[in-house]
Length: 474
Image 1 (cartoon, helix red, strand yellow):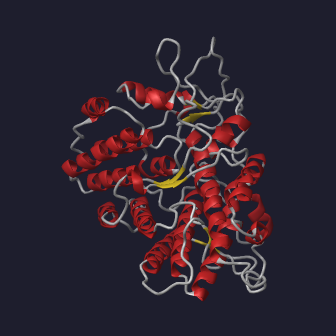
Image 2 (cartoon, rainbow, N blue to C red; image 1 turned 120 degrees about the horizontal axis):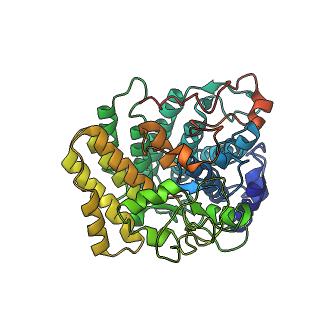
Image 3 (cartoon, one colour; image 1 turned 135 degrees about the vertical axis):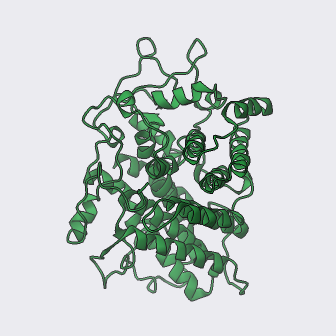
């Protein structure tokens, strides 16, 4: 709860009009005074909350579950695989916050004929529903947010939710492409792309590619077909790092990057530490990103920290995440060009087209390292250690996913979803988590206490260690 209260300060700084009206989701949109509620009043808050709820907060827990990060000392939290319905409230908040307001924005935009706003709302709605279903599986969707006519919405299967996600993306793309004269279009109120509709289109296609590959092993799907859908979407997706969907944070208290706030409020020593396994994976090939991600030990080496143990520079040393890598205003990445190239590489692997896969993987790693300021010679040397790709599907997929895992360090939830979907990277839970009661990573979240209280008759009963989400079917 403290983390959420701290982060809400961001809304005070970025909402250009009527913060109170934005948060009052049960208020009749027809009742405000003339000119009070416009699309530009909704959009900043919807983007900001999705940066927190669908990107920042979600990436926090999952980075611990996939052993990117180590939990310094405290064994009593979700970071140590101990999940509760009360804890899930934080992840479920987007269902009550950003999604209802995105719906109000879309309805207003449709009524006003402002289809750019409607399209953006549909894309953000798809993104947030995907975040919820990927963690919870069944969620309310087709009956959701129909207050007051439907107060206890039914839960839809993940298959149904994913059908809706793709419909929203297709409709969003269509609305962004409309040439109708519109009274209002996004500009500075758009905190993701500053009103650049071309970038919103690329983002939408990139999401279509991400979610197509997510279903590569889902029941009734085939990996080859999903790979083809992924590659088709990527034709219109991000073309360079300049197209990244990055939510840029502010320097002021309560408005900084989520991980920065976590570091100063929820760690024992004011440091963030990578896990033993994550650093060991980087050490194998002397990954040059270590010099950017971490501070080296006095002897120039890099070392991770075992979770639920206390860092001590003398008796239990470790390499903290570098302050230069994690400044206050570090962007929160919804989706990136680098991820697009990793999606392309895996899609070609699934089609067993290894030359094309290697080309895409080279582009992904080069774009990632170049953005971090790593010299061309060091990039070339690193690529020489991991290429050529193995010429079998499973071995090649492992290389691609492992490299994606290293590149997307504390960026968003994709490494966790990849791990459940593919089984990679192979995680040494026992060697990295000092908590024998939880020998495996959670496969989902338990349903939130708030939803159980409000809609208990419809909330499924689940076990977060054993009950996989629908698409987790490899």
